[in-house]
Image (cartoon, helix red, strand yellow):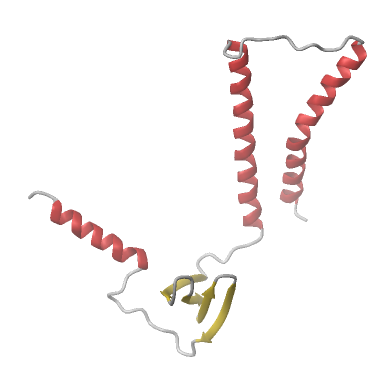
Length: 155
């Protein structure tokens, strides 16, 4: 286990234990004083209540951001294959089935994708070459949108 994972594990444990420690400290102080702690009725829209609400909201949002950051860091530790694997083409066969051509390193693999199942259909002996005029799937829409906007502009 690397040091980064150990540190993030301790950070998560501290974030989760902090509310429990605050509750235990409040209960301990009430038990030592002998008199029960009676909550004081406050105006729900007063400055103290709104300040407490804002502080609690900031703490919760901060904890969500910290946990998201830690999850992103942990995914980087596992290693990634960015740039070495990409989808070259996809063709829908039905409402939920597709055929996908995947480039993995120097090899191209044809996959069948259905709900709950991915199966290898074929490994290309000779990789397919991309034609110079072809674009990415999103690129064709981008080009058509730009052309439509050019036609609508007054000259």
